[in-house]
Length: 211
Ligand SMILES: [Zn+2]
Image (cartoon, rainbow, N blue to C red):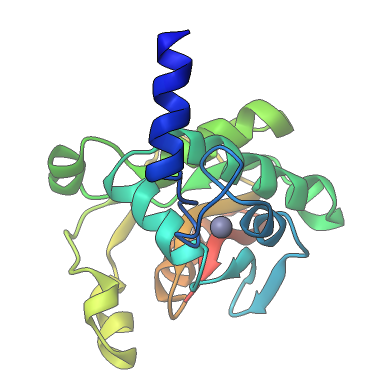
């Protein structure tokens, strides 16, 4: 009872803010409008591979990805995974894919952050869509953050950054690459190239947002 009164008191003076748009919300964590944006029609970008995204890298996705990536807000992994799984289930090509492959981080970065956000997403999606996660890519170069680089430099930065782990066999398999954000697409293209060189049949990309 006292806790309830205390909570009402706190909510009145410090109303809960939506993690997406930072406005006051009656919902827990996310307001209705931000939830609607997360679960709306996907964006499809055609690079060397077809890439699907929940939205563009602005509100609410920029704030939410930051919270997911650097503050480890776990409620977000469930929401993102649900929305990304909806895209897979409703798309003819993605539905027929065999594996989910997260874009890997370099071991130095995992040590620094403690986890690979793309792998966390892939595992969560895997539970819903019933496709296995395959960690068959290795990041051998500890590349600079793509967000700090421009165009050509980005392509150069990720060139030859990934190698295939030969313990896996992906011959004739269809693969969905999972990442949090696509900027120029150079990272996903570089990963796709390695998978196709190793006899994957088709590769698609699936991300939270495109920048
Ligand atoms: Zn909101």
